[in-house]
Length: 384
Image (tube, rainbow, N blue to C red; front, top):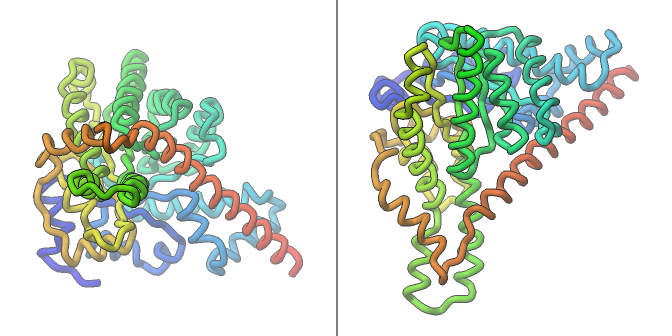
């Protein structure tokens, strides 16, 4: 990993106003110095984590054994040991990103941690855990991840009103993004009504991409298997690999409308930061597509793109930076309309509901798996 002045990631950030965060965290990259190196040489200016990431980081990794053993000797429960491991990693990552946070006046330099995924359907538990996590970690640049479910959005509003940074995750539909943006605004308005400062609160709306194309492409392939009419075949083929980016471009148009509203302008006048759209799930799943398509096609101001390590390296090597989030917008609307074509019949709302349900499950399963493997490790070390 070497510093290059023409690194596309630096161009994306400095020329086009998009921040690149990394979607990965482990004690190994913190202690080895790799995380600091990624900041200085790759331009990474924030980091996100989730239960699946922590399962990969902790399960079978001896670097955590000493801390686990300390927890056992202190008679901590498996959950308490888990939190002690994760909170320490988050605090240390926050400290590493603190210079970025300061240099950007709180615009970047955030580290995201998700509340337990098994409480996604419980508003009050989500509020309680978000506040507890924020206080326990004790870093101004920590961002608490809350799923953008119907039960999660009232929690977002309340947690924002408490002055806590929030990353609203698992957003798939444009409407879910709109609902998230207004939850953020209501939280800020409540804080203003209480006479409290809103200038130091930050939020992102994590809008998922590749999972949409994977799901839609699968539906298209099923239809193609039963079609032999050339025009319909062409219409279906034209949908593949394009819906996620079109959906994101439409969401960005909604963002522009929201920040032009009188309610937002009133908050902005009091120092409020915009809630940026964050492009998530950006590793390309289909090898037939460009490995940086979810980066190149969605560069634009006041957005964040969070990339896994492999996509960071691919982007540093061959991204083609240009402000494209507002290009081909009319085509994006037309593509989404095509899904409703009587011959195509792909119900996007149903797809989005399925993806949200699956998304929560994809966090619950690794969380439960991690707790199980951690319990096994606790039993193993306790027997020594």
